[in-house]
Length: 278
Ligand code: IPD
Image (cartoon, rainbow, N blue to C red; front, side, top):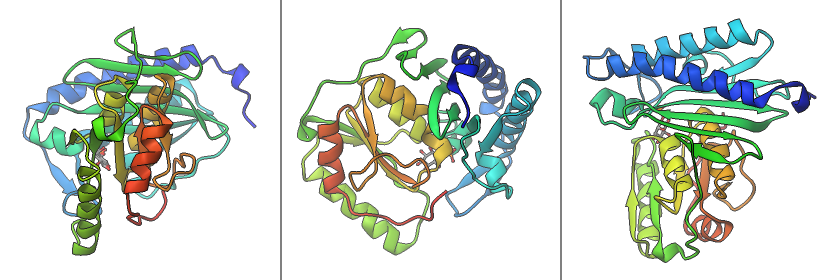
């Protein structure tokens, strides 16, 4: 087992923040330029050359500075690397969370760096590049945005909640039917609204910032929410499995909320949409 005390988590955070700013300038430069777009698993699962370039820059910087650390990166997994989380110090990387936003120049695009040890997230950095918002957390030391401490909403009633949700990139009729059933079920709960930011990490940061009460998604990957999960937890919120159990980073589904009461109420409204594990 890797020893947490041997690693300076503040140093890890500073490294991650600097790296996010460095690659953030590359993303910002490319944001308004024409992009080369490729498809991954479905017609709505996009990747650009900037995703690949930025992931390459991040992995190189990690290898140069921490040669023994492991990593799991969205584009490296897409290129065939295994998504294998061990007890070793491991970086879980999404170079651009919100690639569809990036392609369409919708300004919610984040660099996500999660640092895990013994399969637990210890440090999270989510950098919303176009808005220059740096969300950070170290386990046990609170969550911050641009240095200001975050605290979740104190609402306990799902009916008085603003929800965030994403609907996945599958476009087959069976999946769409389940997606729509879940929307109907949640809207008739009722809730104040369902919003959709196009970035899983930024949806979770919205819950951490008390701008929304909860978020759910099926089809999400570990790199989309590893970093954001600790930011939410350190702001006082929770992430659970959609069936009500503890969060499972590789399960590709989650309910994130400002408290357990709202998380459990929301999970009871949802039917499962199956995805293979990461
Ligand atoms: C996607 C975004 C999107 C979510 C998808 C993610 P990507 O990440 O977070 O909001 O619905 O599940 O895969 O592909 O832009 O890194």
